[in-house]
Amino acid sequence: MPFVTSRDGTRIAYEREGAGPALILIDAAGHFRANSPLDELAVLLAQGFTVYRYDRRGRGDSGDTPPYAPQREVEDLAALIAEAGAPVSLYGYSSGCLLALHTAAAGVDVRRLALLEPPLDTDDDRAEARAFTAKLRELGGEEAVGFFLTEIGVPDDLLAGMRGTPHWTAMVSVAHTLAYDSLLSEATGAALLRRVATPTLVLHSAGSTADLTAMAATTAALLPAAEQRSLPGEWHGVPAAVQAPVLADFLRRDTEPA
Image: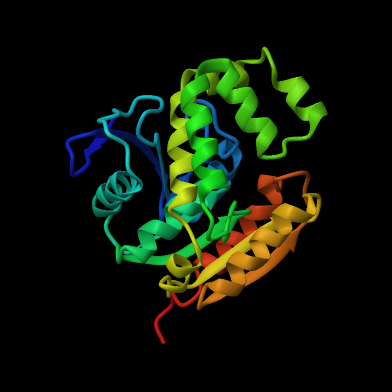
């Protein structure tokens, strides 16, 4: 299994498939390559792109050098971008969108961004967010997973169906990293988005709740070079077969010689 080494020495595990322009997929909170909703999307996109997937720090086969800071995750992703050969495009799902935005804002060579339902909080009062992070750290394990999923609005029937499944067990195995995503959220606001000049496609599911679609709209409005689309889907998700052609069309723009 290949690894890249981040600036602080953390080894980040990744895999690559396909051929074409480089595209890195960024998982959401609690997910990693062995427990990811992006499997089918990666296969479809690999038909026209070199698709990179990796385990964010603290998950799967990647290391986890303390202390955590959002900048460390940017450095992880920058190391993978250097390995892939910049510029690359980034696709983020949920909190993975926030990492993609931080990376572009940091000046890393990113050609295009595609974001599915970024959980953007533009409230300048971060006290509630800090309390959420502290609670995640206090609980840990299954309690942290249950608390996190409930607080982000996972419908009760979906949450009940997740408990005791392999997916649930996998999330529990990386429960300590849920606080990492919460810290990433704390560090993401309107000022950061206004610094991201990268062409960006913001997607949301027509089947999501109003809060998620509103956050997507706010993200698109704050970014200097963004467009937004609604796609058929379920709560906080769009089928890979629906997303793939839309993403391919957007990510391939301006790649042909003038």
